[in-house]
Amino acid sequence: MTTTPPLLIATTNAGKIREIRHLLAHWPNLRTLTDLPPIQEPEETGATFADNAALKARYYAGYSDLVTVAEDSGLAIDALGGAPGVHSARYPGATYPDKFRNLYAALEPHPRPWTARYVCAVALVVPGSEVPRFACQATVEGEIAPEPHGTQGFGYDPIFYYPAYGRTFGEVEDAEKLAVAHRGRAFRILDEWLMSTRGESLR
Figure 1 (cartoon, helix red, strand yellow):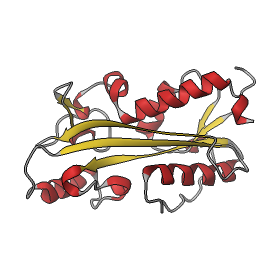
Figure 2: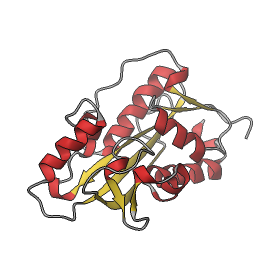
Figure 3: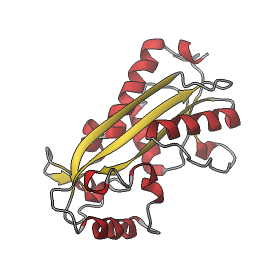
């Protein structure tokens, strides 16, 4: 696969970069936004995770002239009508502990269990194309823990309780999380597609 084109992963999030590099370890030439000059982020106006993933992939492919993979992910809580959803990163709160407190305040009137899911949508765009060459979405079901636990992972992981493990994602190692989590599932689907096409679909 030495002749395969570079693949830009459109994120500067260190936690996501660490996970995605592990998940796409077969791909020989991965780049991220941290390898490029700074660029203003696009406004995420999509109504769904898939909309925002495609929007970001098109935007950064146009900027970089590289085949670009973008993802949009977040937490959807049933008691809150699917919120924070596509607004997960922009949910009120300057830090994630602040966001947790605001979420718990919103959840307080609702009976437990607070069922929830993590969602990850992925889109791959070839420069010059408006339509993703590849797209997929994956989820992992769980609950919101009564209080945060753990310091592993990032984002909402300390409050996302995964019943099969009996722990939050903040209490498990990276390998355990990626084996079942939304981003792991979505990027394994992408990796299988990339390996099956051997890069031919990216030209």
